[in-house]
Amino acid sequence: MQGTFGQVEFVPLPPRFADRVRWGSVVVGCSMIAGMVLLFGLTTFLQGIVHGHAFPDTLVGKAAAVLPPLGVLAIAVLVLSSRRCLRGDYLVVASAASARNALVFTYVLTLVLVLGSFAVPIVFRVWRDTPQFRAPDLLTTFSTLAFATMGFLAGMFYVRPSVQTLRKFSDHPIW
Image (cartoon, rainbow, N blue to C red; front, side):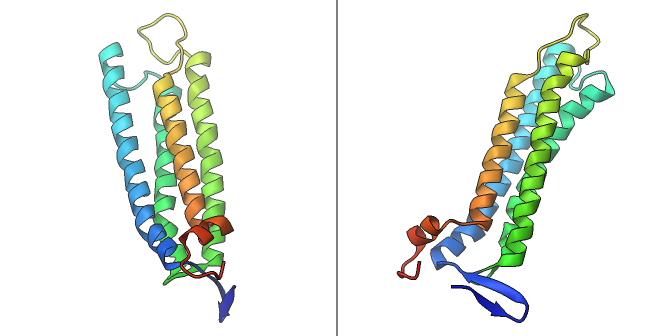
């Protein structure tokens, strides 16, 4: 089922699935970006109400607040760029492999950042207005984790479709 043209290897995709990749990657990527911006805005708004200012007082607290959303935005950009793995109704194997590797690396990095942002308020005192250590912000932590996981799964669905998925979208019994 695979063909080569020069040095580039292609895998034919059902046209309905190729359309799903083209439009779905835009919808998922833009939704992730908009959702993460709204979540970050909500978090900073609530922290501003509780503490009088939006960001923690220490540098490590600021990094823990900003880096995980940036990881999710990087995953969103990778999902948006998964369209470049298509040439017509064909999946370019080399581009898909590099997109998968980038998704896995970014997802693991984002998981590390989310776990770090969860641990920072427990280990360090990041807000000067409270004398004790604080519990981490669970809404932001779990929402960021959910955004990252959903983006990762959607991106992997687009650049590494299973045979069952290809059969589902196929109009012809080639799969």
